[in-house]
Amino acid sequence: MISAFNHWFKVPDEKLNIIDEMIDMLHNASLLIDDIEDGSDLRRSSPAAHVIYGIPLTINAAELTCLLAVQKTFDLNNPRAERVVVGKISFF
Image (cartoon, rainbow, N blue to C red; front, side, top):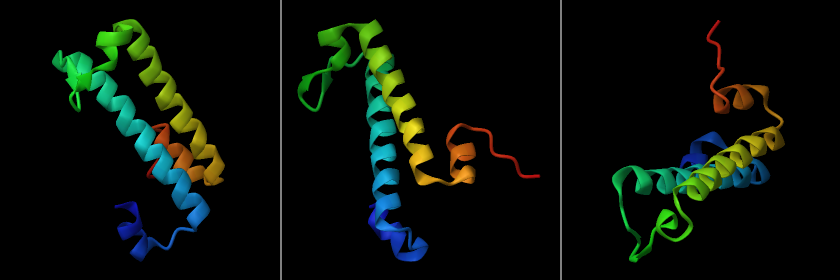
């Protein structure tokens, strides 16, 4: 789907791949947490991570995945992207 948006934005492939990886990582981390919050025992017909590994380890894995995604932001060499991802964007 990101490739469809890139039709207009024309992001270089190397940076687009980083962005795609970041989105995937953040999505997966959100699914780990969502399953805990919803009390879901299954994810795509398989046992959810927290059922197998426990809630604390699953939360730690989700947090680490988020941190690794944020770390990938610095591979973009774009200060504005860094501010957006870490939630410190300024409009002034």
